[in-house]
Image 1 (cartoon, rainbow, N blue to C red):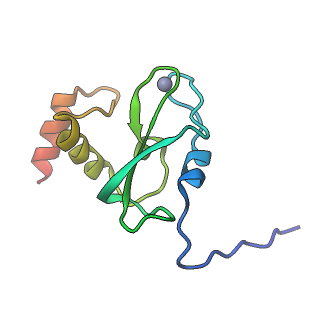
Image 2: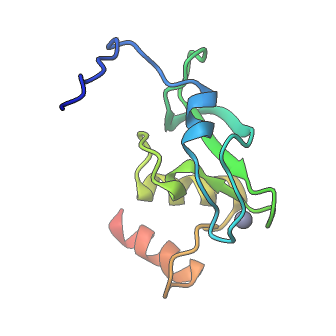
Length: 115
Ligand SMILES: [Zn+2]
């Protein structure tokens, strides 16, 4: 039997709780589901119910205490991989995303080469 597809209102925006609930596990094995999200206004971020502007969302793992952007966990938002790296450089001064086989310096060089 085919389940009826749930239609969402076109103006529906997922809430912070929805995003938080969609998280699974951190790379270290820590459980991220329903962890409180860290959010702030950012044009490259996600639409969140109850917020006027897009929000940059990240979560702090309760086990390894690393703060990671939700793009890291394949949560669909506006931010692309490139936008995420640019944001990390702007906010932390360097790339914080770990990509297997690349140093953060190599990622930054790759990013600059694209622009
Ligand atoms: Zn972790």
